[in-house]
Length: 128
Image (cartoon, one colour):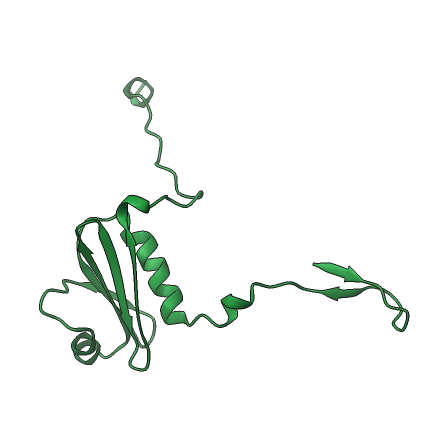
């Protein structure tokens, strides 16, 4: 946040600085990015079906296209996670828009908030 002073207005004027690109990113793409971040840690292909009231269903994507899944489950949006060699790809479709993002698995670096859970030595876990 920045403060400016003006000769015509008494007191400071607050100017908030936002990341303008975040306002124009659709929820479909934002969710696909979140799914890709999570899928980089996994090892299997899957499809995520988002219901009209927000419920989630995870299904095997074998033999399904995105439009077929959306029609069959009456979904608001569907996402498919695929692995092809070292590439992880997420495709999303909500009936109006589609997106496809991919990342090389070797380029994955977990976010700073992600840390493996430390395990306790067996001696400390024994009942006393």
